[in-house]
Image (tube, rainbow, N blue to C red; front, side, top):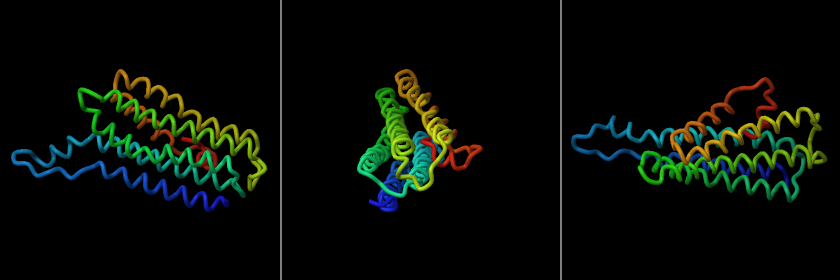
Length: 205
């Protein structure tokens, strides 16, 4: 399989997942005595979860493009790891809707936040593993050879997101809001520009 075909298939999954996110934001029903502004404001968990997930999927999509464009050929291991990554991407609309529905509830909010944060953690682990496999185990498939220092820098920036996601998953048992805030902060961190544009694009944020 060519890198272009793998990327085209992956782009389709990314596009569907990022589009499905908005389906959880509903138009409020017209109610007598209840203002539209109040009803819109009451949906803030859906907005927060949507923005966090949209930004995260977008960043992963950019990084995925940078990861695949380094390759001149694809092998079975890369295809398998890529499918696992897409599996974690495809579940994000569900976990996003779940945390949006339960974060303000007296029951289930901690579990929902843990599942939401855990889905990001799993996604980051799979992306980091895929990126590391490509950068270090499949050098022969690279279009242009990268210096080991640059490869390690790319991996380090991607792995940096694992600790906050792990913290958010554990902290969800205490505060669902804190877990949601950490996931949002990680998304903002990886959206910020870095000194090396190439390294930024190839990170696993």
